[in-house]
Image 1 (cartoon, rainbow, N blue to C red):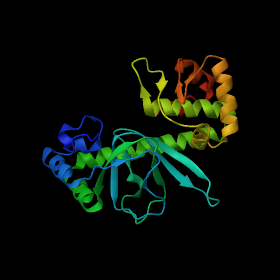
Image 2: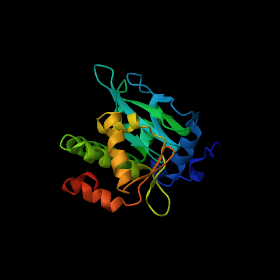
Image 3: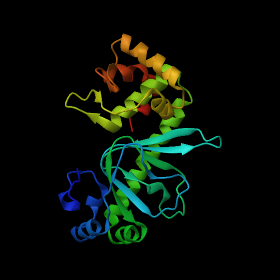
Image 4: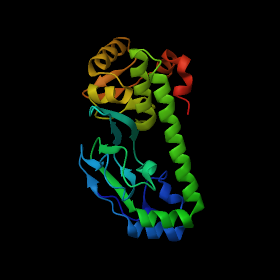
Length: 236
């Protein structure tokens, strides 16, 4: 269902557009498009022209990159209030792609309007820079840790990253996202078989619970304890 296109009425408090002044919030509301993307659809493709930036209003997205052999890896995950395409601002083509993990409504703002908004709203510009810096730092930390971890630690880090991005519920223990073993493997740079073995082991220990394709984390502190030597990986 469509959410009101007026940014002032948007329920997503963390949307970066809200950092603009009131005049510009109205201008961006008028200029943007807010289509609904079905699950599994590209928001933009690797190598496609950079026409603007995207702001997730509702839904979940994975940002992907392909190596020379065509193997796909998930660079990062994004949810409501996150910005997509920010790393390509000022470039001609995207070096990464973005695909929806579920039906999503995503706002698009074209390059020219975005540039004017940056020039007229220093707070907006600064917060976009902070967002970019934070996401880059998270990615660098994950990459560093994954290069040092064993398979169990990699899967645990992946689950905690999912929790940090998509945490739902008042108990703070439930990751509700429709990911199969292969998709989880793409996040942590391993294969589906290794992910399946580790998840089975963690389930036997009571550290995770599964309902259909939903993974629940009833004891996040214990999972963090398992990778305590990489504490900086979960503290951004």
